Amino acid sequence: MRGTPRSGPTPRKSVALAAAVGGAVTILIAALPFTSFAYRSPGLHTAIETSATLTALLAGVLVLGRFLRRPTLRELVLAGGLLLLGVTNLFYSLIPALVDDTPGSFDTWSPLVGRLLGAVALALATILPATPLPRRRRALMHAIGGVAVVVVAMGVIGALLAPVLPTGIDPELSPESSSRPRVVGEPVILAVQLVAMLLYATAAVGFMRRAEETRDELMTWLAVGATLLAFARLNYFLFPSIYSEWVYTGDFLRLGGYLLVLAGAFREIFMYQRELAEAAVHRERRRIARQLHDGLAQDLAFISGHALRFARSDDGELARHIARAAERALDESRLAITTLTRPVGAPLDASVAQAAEDVAHRAGVQIELDLAEGVEAPDSVHEALARIVREAITNAARHGGAQAVAVRLRADDGVSLTIEDDGSGLPADTSQGFGLLSMRERADGLGGTLRVSPGGDRGVRVEVQLP
Image (cartoon, rainbow, N blue to C red; front, side, top):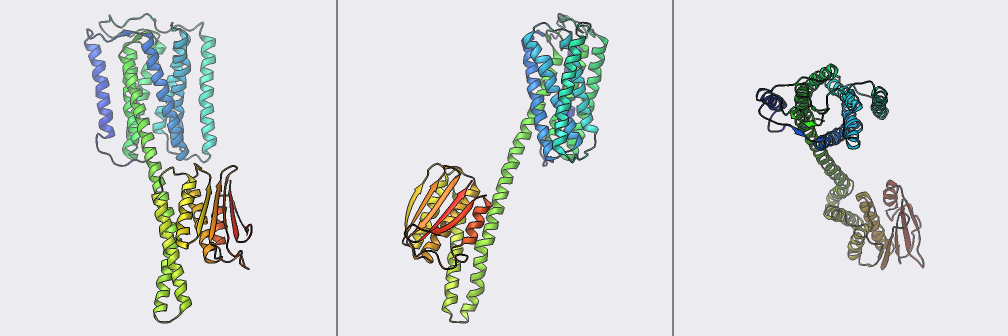
């Protein structure tokens, strides 16, 4: 998604600021050991894991939505990486922490592998080409299935090897009394922390470049978040705490990275909602323009052309044609005004009543309304039924000489609209007049039917049935 130019820090400056903060915190803690910043709190660890889990899952689902709109390989890999991080945190960190307060080897090695693979996916998402994927839904299902397979495989292998795998880091290890960085623990875990740091740093640079190229605001937030996550891994290498009961600098840097990703996700949702609102306004404007072109503009063109002929002749029939065209143009303009001023969420009976009363007043006929109240319907149904009511009442008064018209609206099984008049009945040729073609097209356009038949004693009954 390409964004619009925005004021404020550029992606490069934002990443540089995050790197400065992460570096300053790391150097401060390493150089000034008397700055005690450690808490023994399994509950706080659980809260951090909860935040990381929910943020990664939300961001992953959000990127999946972007993939459906723009199906490229790197968007799919990015979504898969975020989902893998979220699911790994959920099943192998958060749930075990809630069930068992004492971390074990399973709680160390399973999330270690999942987080490493998630970091690999984030880094790959920044260097892979934007290759379009033709079968987006199939690719999406494969990606989700792949994440599920990886997570299940990690759990099975971790459970089988748990009895022989070391804990990794002593849960009782206290960074509080250290006078310098304490690089302790299993060499494999320490190596993974450094590799993950490099992967997040690569992802941060890649997201920053994508943000500069595409002006994609989400990429900026991901770049800044990945920067803090890289420094979090460095702190986990220098001051082990992620697999112990102690909460230390790396944990807060990790939390800050995920919170930045969360802020980017919220900004993306906000912009997406704004785009939807703008698209809805644009569609409504096009609809109104189309209606004015097909109705009002055509009638005005007719009036303009024939008025010149009438000025050079003394033709009464032509004058009547001009008057009717002017009446249609006026009716179209009134309908457009009514449509534009209708309150949001107004019930269908209000639209039908307004259309019927307006035409009946101008045509000089009595109107009887029997309308089901509170019926909710899309704008397209409001407009179609209002036009059918106006057309039917106008024809009843003009061609049938009706004195009274009854309008009934029901919403039992779909929407049913009936307009019945006491006029002289159907003309000899029902294919012309009564605006049948226009009314039928509007009913068909909504997947419904329109039937015209003789009324009870006399007159005409127009029945519309919508699904």
